[in-house]
Amino acid sequence: MPGKIVLCRCEDVTLADVEHSVSRGYRDIEEVKRYTGFGTGPCQGKECLAVVALQLARITQQDPGAIPPFTSRPPLAPTPLKLLARDPGAHRFPDETEGDG
Ligand code: FES
Image (cartoon, rainbow, N blue to C red; front, side, top):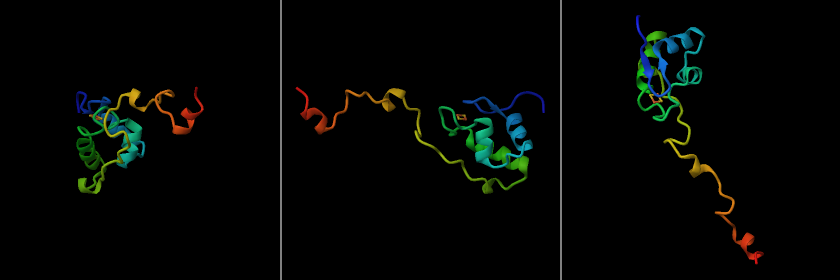
């Protein structure tokens, strides 16, 4: 098959990458995700999960309905790091402020 067929635009995962992962013995959608990195981009697989699952079903000769979606991990949406970082001065428990002054 000539040309590069991109299945996951966020992580630049191609049909050849998925075929290679199957040739290495990774036949489960979770294994293919870990091997290729598909579904780990900003859209978290919203744009590529179905097409990768269909191609995985075709390559492994499985019923597409037999391939479950991969497990989503939080955060479920792109999250700025500043929302996760803790500012030590921004949060104090009541006991911590009583001794001040
Ligand atoms: S297209 Fe695959 S993670 Fe966005």
